[in-house]
Image (cartoon, rainbow, N blue to C red; front, side, top):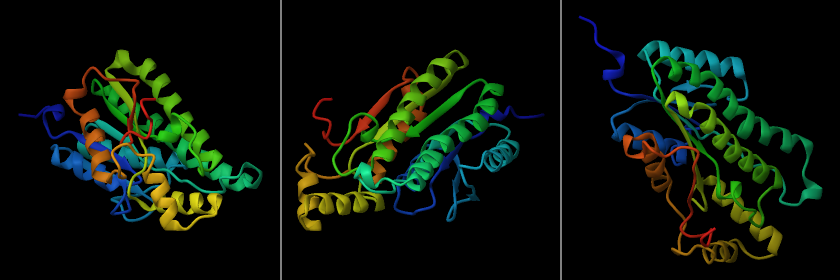
Length: 250
């Protein structure tokens, strides 16, 4: 007697999950705690070494996961970079190309490879890790990063519209300040732009957060896991701030 693969543990792929202290690793843990089989992608430190900018590499890796488990239920597009200057006149073409290649093209590559498997098994959930910078401009953030995250939010909404009838829910989480390596870089850029110390720059950023502190990766991951769950069955096309009130009600 065979077992319906949809009755076995749900399967999720999380990209950009190689750093142990990042949102990707925290999301993988949160989904495992929710009962998922989770496979992580990253350049290093993950289950599969995958460069999301390489469409063929992505397709091969996702096909391997779907073949191993017989289905794919969730995809968390967390892989991303934030490089370059916050001064537009110092923005290099190399930094722009890399940012768009990872943050936008990489996301599209993963979705194009994963969605056919979800279509075959009746649906799924895709969570795109965008940023508060995908909803509004923030000081001392590279322009290319802001543009890429606005693109992530736009792609989320357009893909949700297209694949909603196929029972594939697609949402974005938009973290504000999160205690990761990327926050450390953002603090450094803010300090440079304002001509202040790193300590003063951190205090300045924190002063913009209504709850008075940066988020932890696990707090962002909890929202990712919720959006993958049946509790979010009626949510698609949303871009949800996880920012401690940095939006000020935006």
